[in-house]
Amino acid sequence: MTDRTIRNLANLSGSASTARVLNLSRVHREHGHTEAWAEAPMFINPVLNRSLIVKHRLRRDEIDRFRLRRYVATKIILPIDAGDLRVGGRYLFIGENGFEQSMTQAFGVSSDHPDMHTLKIMDRLPGLDPFLLREQLRRNGVEPGACYFNLSEADLQAMFAFVGAEISPLVDLCMDAESDLAADNPVSVLTGKILSNSAGDDLSALGMTLRLKPEEYEEGIFCWKGFLYYKWVLRDVIGDVGGVVEAVRRCKPLGRPTSQQHVELGRAREAVKNRILATCETTAGMLRVYDDAFRGLTEDGQPTGFRDFLRDAPHLFARLGERLGAVQHIVSFWKYRMGPDKPLPTAEELIDLLADFEISLTGRDEDVGGLALAA
Image (cartoon, rainbow, N blue to C red; front, side):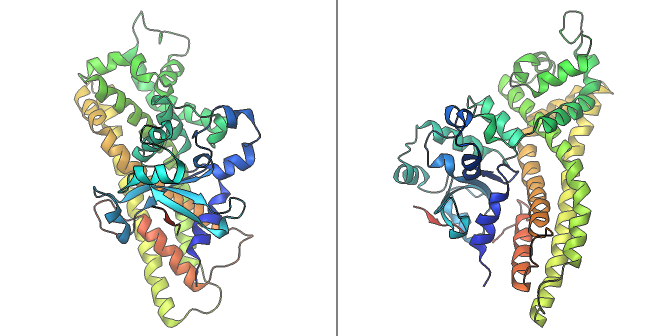
């Protein structure tokens, strides 16, 4: 029988921070001896600060755990043995019925505890991409040490260069004789403002031009940053998707599958392929909404479309993050599970894996199917 607990917990130890998983157990293992880990923790509570935080596509029997209908939730997993995740763990969902009472019982964390504030910030994000998680936490006054984010200097520089190229048409609109953009490298200055924690203040003139309320503009600027980040990420994901789709189609399980398993594998392969391609197209379509609005502002001198984009950005950002995060999860997990050092999956495990992929790609408009044992 396939051990879903092993697949879903032990294999999470491969990374400290991804679009779907924040592995604080691994961060503690690698950085627990450092001042950065101790002096600027992600969570004050020491047990929470060694947990796993996972964006989880709710199964049909889990949807009723919430007062309001949702399809993706943020799961807190407490490994039973942090040194061996194969043992499994206990979990609860942020915001589920009785959540605050469960947090008090499990951690001694009350509703007004700073860690509850941090958890709710995480829950509002569509994914746990380290760049966006860091920025959203900073916006809300939470600044954990750099060791809690799997961000290399090379990635940050690449993101900076990408954003600079993307927003260069905006420079002329923002420059005037008094502006600090009138510098040797105005694109770099504007890029720094957009990617900084104070972008909302630094670019407030743009918000007034677009006639947006301060709260609309501040949230829109963050989501604009998210769109730029996802656009950058999508370039790499698209490059990997074709190979994963082909690998899913060609992968043969260990041993000889039964006739029923053979039929199910064929159905699951086709379903996963179609859902991956459809999700990528939907994601690209959402990014085109931004591209069209930005082009209207910078090339046509029509700010209305970009104003509407910033107003709608929080909703679009959430949908975009969920969809792109699901594709990122499939690409990264498939490459991990099918690595050259890994054994071939059995037919049952392969069917189970493809079913998990299929569910994770289910759209928000489609129905899917104390602490509990993690599964």
